[in-house]
Amino acid sequence: MAVAGLLAAGCSRAGGGTASSSPGSSAPAPASSSASSASAAGDFGTLSNVCHGGSASGATAQGVTSGSISVGVLTDVGFTKDPELENAAKVFSDWCNAAGGINGRMIVPDFHDTVMLSVVAAMTSACAKDFVLAGGSAALDGLAATTRVKCLLPDFDAQENMPQAAGSALEFGAVPYNFAYADYAGYYKWLLQKYPDSVGHTALVWGNSAVTQIDYADQAATIKALGGGNLTSITFPATGVTNWTPYAEEIKAKGIKGFSFYGTPQWLIPLEQALDTIGYKLDWIDTNSNAYGTQFIQLAGNTLTKQTNYLSLFGIYPLEKSSDNPTLMKIQQLYQQYAPGQPVTLQALQAFSMWLAFATSAQTCGSSLTRSCIYNAALKLTSWNGGGITATENLATPLAPPSCFNIEQASPSGWAPATEFTPNTDGVYSCGEPTIKLPSSFPAPVQLSDVGKSLTELK
Image 1 (tube, rainbow, N blue to C red):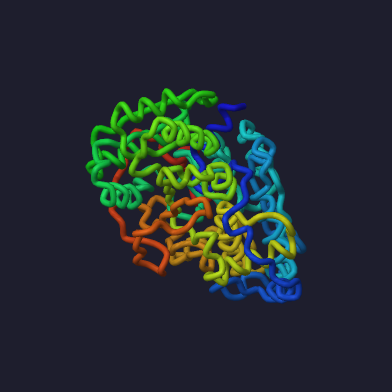
Image 2 (tube, rainbow, N blue to C red; image 1 turned 120 degrees about the vertical axis):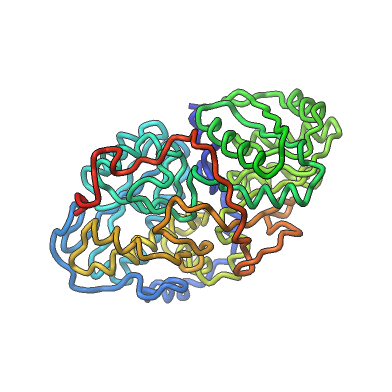
């Protein structure tokens, strides 16, 4: 089970699998009257009339009746004990239903707990009764990709993780992510330009498991393409270690000036403390986005004044800047109303973006709500940003190269946009970054033809 925990940490891109609250969760709570007002209309950020009443009727598809729509939500909550995706589903559906639902049909979230390792069984259950999937994520999603595609189940996924799932058929994601192109190209370009002495003195420090081997291959190819060269690989047991001093000494002995860490964020902290103890300071440390939360900040404490910690957000609006973003403020308000005391997390923002994509697409179908209709409607979302949650992307091109990113820097007071990072889009993101094609050695995303299906069978 410890290995499974590392798998979740290794493939999460938005803090999934951690129980820490988000940097934005401590925003001042709005008055309840304001929250009620926020839920009265069906508008959301820049999106108009997302949810509203109507006279839709008929059992037009599996999971659809005259009064309701069953929407599957995959989570690993039985293992992680983190209900962030369940919270997001509850908050969104309660808000949407209060605004009238999808043309009068109420959203009914149907939760499928993978317990981390039973992802195929969870997907099989969803295939048997749900209309679509929305706002969910599973660390080992690639293992169930064939099952989902074979049963022609569209998925508005909060976060794809494994190569077989990222960019697979009938799948839409909150941010561009696949294994055809490097997702960290802009980020590593920025790091290597800001810290030129780290070129040729970079390492990947990772827990040795099947999934993190994929992460290693992805980032190693990216750094090499950017001229990083001579990349050092430092592995540790997938279950973690009790003494990080030998790893700190290896980093010092090899003259490493920057490294990316793939493992549980809590393991990175004693490694950084060991580096401090032996008096070795790096130019930069990439924590990866699992560390984006208050828990890492609180546990790391004063260590953050001695080592420079960064992470990359994949074009997701930073939580600590929620007060500058009406859409994030609305999400905070709705959490106060429908899930009081629960934090808004980075992965919850991704879930909200996909819940909104689901609702925006579904409401265009009127009474004739079918999988074919909602899928084709979603393909028309060619300039999608979740109402202001993410940088703009084209949902119709899941295998397009990622373009936008933003960088966070840690300090004892919290996460904040990195100093010297200069956004060129919307005041938050850097877009139009270099495209780096990854080697074709990664497993391919599952397509309809792989399971003997075609779009003509999508009803």
